[in-house]
Image (cartoon, rainbow, N blue to C red; front, side, top):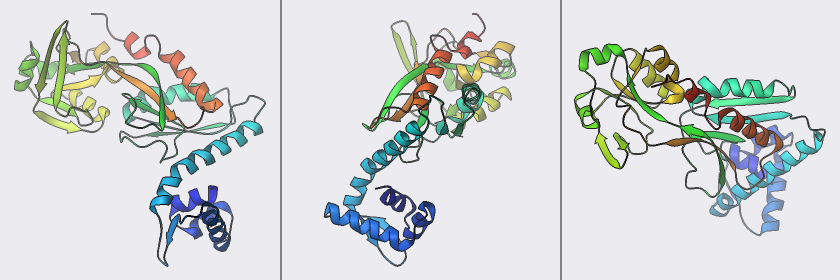
Length: 300
């Protein structure tokens, strides 16, 4: 199964053999033995490429989970003394990963000299199982997948803000509808597109904005707002320092934006490993009940 996973991932018998320390002929032999045992063809072979059959594609995900679980069990036995060790592959959004998570992971790792975190920051919604992440931090809940389990880490509050220079030029909106007359900086990964939602008690309203600047990265939009380009839909974890020092000013702060959550995602097919569980527990203790970025906000 391990050999099949590597061949499927690399689309090559030779490359899988090099990675596993086997000859191409031995890799081919093991795949044929597996197919004989299953009485099914898993791979299409040609002189130029290897590809999965439909049955092979269906068989791949449970194989990946089984191989990962076996490797984790071997590591747990090897380090039964309680020391957290080995690689810990983490993926997170760029802004949160660089501003908050990197420091937390570094402090978590200090007592564990044998632990080797690999932190990958990217705003793409990558499949953690497909890309081999032990833990994925995401703003929002679980995607439509039974393969992932979730644990909430912290509330993630939205905030509209702009620089004093921009507001001096354009004026400060008094109601959400006024945003139609303003330059708005839009985060392209918002699930409702360029529609911003607001609530005030029982009142609800939605505004479709005309984005003057759009990016798929919160830090990019943050910099644009600091330069006075317009009103940004940000998060308190990204904007707290600028709000505290006055380089950004809250806008429409008597209206609430939808509350979201930072969540930890991991494969549901197995119990989280001791190091994954320990990191999640560490982050929960760091970020609950009130995360440090919300504690840093100026008192209104």
